Structure formats: C-alpha cells, structure tokens
Length: 291
Image (cartoon, rainbow, N blue to C red; front, top):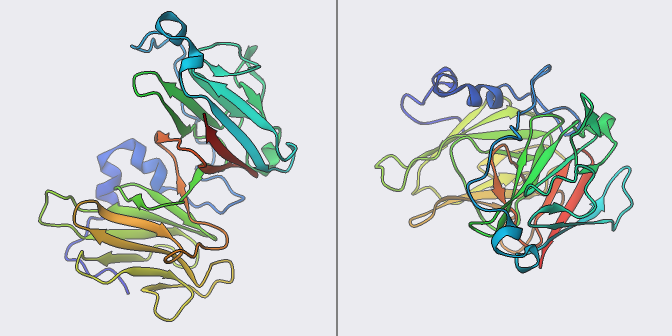
C-alpha cells in the first residue's frame, strides 16, 4: 500500500525544519554500515557545561540513588557475562575518572592527549565508534538516559513492550530502516501516520495510515499491510496501531509472540533506560539491570 494521504509533507520540507533532521534523512545504513553519512562529525559534548543539579555527593550519597548494571550478552571482543557497574557519579573503575554523571563507551581511549571513554570496546572494525554512546544520570529524576553520539553504526534499543511513535523516530528490523515522517497529534484533527523506508527492499516507499485502520501488521505473511519477502524477518515482525489516549504505538511481533531478531529503535536523542532494556552498539549487546 503506497501513501494515500493528500499532499504529504515532502522530504525537503522536513529537511528544512532543522539541520539535525537532515543528518537522519541521509541514512543509507545496513547493520554493518554506519547509520551516519561518511565524514559526519560526531556529536560534541561540552565538558565545561555545568549541570544545574548538585553533584550527588553534595546532598545525597550516590549509594542512595539507583544503580545501573550493564551485562554484556553478546560481543565480538568482550567476554560474555561481563558486568559494567554504574552509579550516579559514573562507571566504577572508569578510565576517565571524572565522576560527572556520565559514562562514555567507545573504541578509542584517548584523543588529543585526553581520555575520552570510561569503558573501551575495541571493535571499531565491527561498527563501534571512537566515542560511540553516552549514558547519563539525571539526579532530578533519578533516571539513567542513553543516547548515540554520532560515531559508528548507531546505538539501538530493542523494542520490548509497546513504544509510542514520535515524528523523526527511526525503527530498524532486518536490513530495513523506516522513519516516522508524521505521527499526527492527540490534539489535532489530523492523526494519520506517515512512514518512509530509508533502506532495504522498500527504500523510498511511503505508507500512510489513519487511526480507524485495522492493526498494521509488518512481516512476511499475506495479511501484512507492509509485506516483505525477506527470510531475515519473522512472519509477523512488528505491528502498529492507534490508541485514543496514547497515539500511535509500535509493538514487536504479534500478541505474545516476539519476532526472532527483534525490532530496534535508533536512539539519536536521550532515551530512558529501564530495567532489562536491551541495546546494541556495534556488535555488542547489553542488558540493563537497575538496583
């Protein structure tokens, strides 16, 4: 089913909205290829910016905050079962030793004579960026957040339970990447969703659905609204449906049956780490455990 909407927003109009979106629109990646265009500059994090909230040890001992343990469940270089212990101030045994709420993970130890990562995963040839991702603790919410830093093949979180789709989200499965061009608004009369494939067998194809449409099945079966002939995908890879109070929601698989290889969200912006969240960077998979 091709896009059925009247006068859908053009990609050029979306690109003009912000330079940030232009980088996302240029994605031509596969799982082993960078999600960023060649020669793209990694995100710059200004270490001199002072976070408004007080450091944890100034008002509250970091032990009183939740602790995050990251377990390596798959990797080409790190032993399976390795656990990274992170508290409010950062990674225990950090190579940066900054205690600044932040934990950087990447393939390169130093840049211009300065240690840039707290934990090193030396699999740059497998897609791990020099400074690949950031995990940051927010003391005002007591939450840990993860975000990609723009170097490498991208950071992706596995869609476990339902996920509220937002404009600009990039969802990946198999060799396909699809972007939410528009997801309407709960307060708007126009609540349609428009998605466009950025890579894979349906590259450049757009699909448009209305809230009163039946559940949108994606996969290999004949009753899938977006159907693939791809053995890397499950019969029912994922599905999208509209909920009056939540908006457009994405779920992996169908019912209680999950897909074989998972459905993934690219975390360009900060994403809250919840207990048992699975995410990947390069060829390494992590599972979170919050205490």
